[in-house]
Every structure is written in structure tokens, then in C-alpha cells.
Image (cartoon, rainbow, N blue to C red):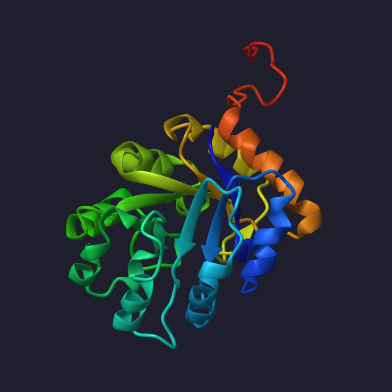
Length: 244
């Protein structure tokens, strides 16, 4: 069965303790500990040993998406403290010197990007990244891929090319400004078209920004994306066109 759960940052931003506890009562089995802003990194690392992660079969760690207070060397030194079984999700534009990251091996889980970013958006851009990080794994963000290409062609290409590296997926809708929002019906239909390319045991992390009252519904929508066959006939069938 697929482990599924939420990013702590989607539920409570920098309050990772609340982000863990908010989802515990919903029976989820995966969690991503988020330090998207580099000022959040050290407080989270200091508390790692005290966190109650019982019940989560999959735990991942999202490294900062932008460096403002830290440099690359300081970030890499800090990431050495992450438990070795956890994938570390990294945005490719944070990787300034690829050879310095190779010590992480498969633990380094590189995520495809949305259209705001300068790289990591397409198959060819991800090919370049993985050529420099041959042991790295892949975090497929379906919302990012749809924002780049609403036809889902980019999503299909990414999954076909890098399925062997796939270690985790991110699921949400991503608006034109790069914000992670609840999954709409239109996004759900697009996602279902590519869901069959995602292995059934690949952990899924929901990044939709929701409050406690929305958790159950967003969880059900994400599960529907990943488990239901797409409905090809979305509108009533029409009769044959008549000649004029």
C-alpha cells in the first residue's frame, strides 16, 4: 500500500510539531518535515531527536528551497545530521556545486521545478542535473509538471525517463504564481492521466496548503487521483454530426 501524508510546511509552515500532530488523527502513514526557508533549518534539526514520528512508515526531509542566511557549505554540513534512511528533497537551483552533494548518494532526492525556476522544469533540464549527480533519486512534483505543461506531456516525459530513480512524489495544484493550492477537478483529471506511470508503492506527500478542516477532503482527493482510473467521457455523449 502506498504511504501517503502531508508536508508539515503545507499544514503549519514553520511549526513542524503542529504539522505532524495535525495529520496524525487522519491515519496517514507518511510525513515530510519541511524547512523550506533556511531560517527554519536549524530549529528543526535541533528537535529531530525529540519528534514523535511513530506511525509514519515513510519520513522525508525537505531542504531549504532558497539560501538567504546560509551558504551551500553550511547547508551541506547541516544535512549530514539527517537520519540516513530519510530522502532529502532538494530543489536543483540550490545545488551550486554538484560534486559537493554527491556524498549523499541516493538520499539526495532532486525535485522537478515549476516555471518560475531557471532549471529542473523539463526532461532535458533534469537530464543535465542527473548527469552531474548520477546516484541521486527523483522527487516527482506533479503540480509543478502540470504548471509547466497543462497537457501533462512534460509529466509523462519525466515519469517515463526517470521512473527508475523515483523515490517520492509531491501532489497538489500549483497556481500560476507557484503557490501550492488544493487540487481542483481540472487538475485531478489531468493527474489521473499520468497516475498509472507512478508505482503503487511510491510514497506520496501532499503539499496543498490547507487548514485542519480541509485535511480529510484533500487526502481523499489525492487518493482518488492515485487510485482511480481516469474518466475519459467527462461530458454526455453526442450523436454524430449532421451534414449541412
